[in-house]
Image (cartoon, rainbow, N blue to C red; front, side, top):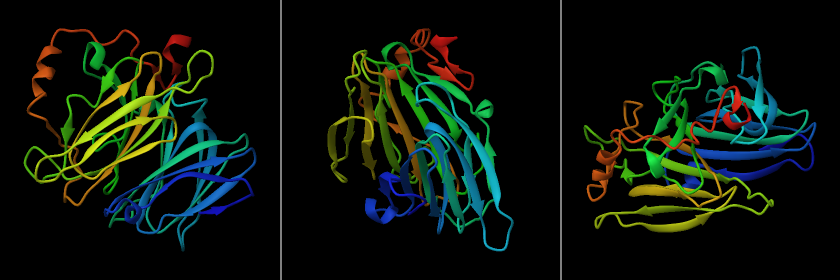
Length: 294
């Protein structure tokens, strides 16, 4: 990363090699007022997703005219659904912000070079999943059905305090008719409590006898959990603290698809949701803003 001015910060910088895998990556950049940073995408398609603040994104491809997008961001991840920008592989991405902010750059190594594009917040599909205390909101901004990419799959999940998401636990690490192989990054942010104290949540990952993994971690804003394989879930929002996570996925399959397999020990839980209402706190936000503020 090349910082435009002193003070530009990279809070998260995960390349595939750092994670010990092949495709998925994530950077989270913090810019002060008037700062900018430039990133070479290399062999990875890359998104710019505002987490807090607005920005201007300039995509430069050798031999082509630069393309510029203005991203109308948000105060924080809980306040609204945001627009975003897509940059192809073999490009330079410059992110600048008049007022400063924090910006996620999820990425995936890929083969095709697609054109730079703008994703308006109003076109991001917002989905409610689960029921009761397993209710959550999913912003499908870069899922296969919502936005074209070569390998990258990304979405945001908002979970009200006290609820569980990524539940029942599921996995996607085998190439079968019902499962696709996807490396996954979970990036977390947690809402503060009323007195400004930092919130917390928890993430569980566990494996099989053939491919063991055992993770149960407290997560706070800025934390990342890498999931190379295994069952993952639940993602637990502690009572009183809303939980956000950004999912970044990519894998080797010829088809860009998100297919999962529930842990058979807990798959029965889905059957209890039929006819049950989703949490009344959902949806938490939309492109128009925070629901409770309207």
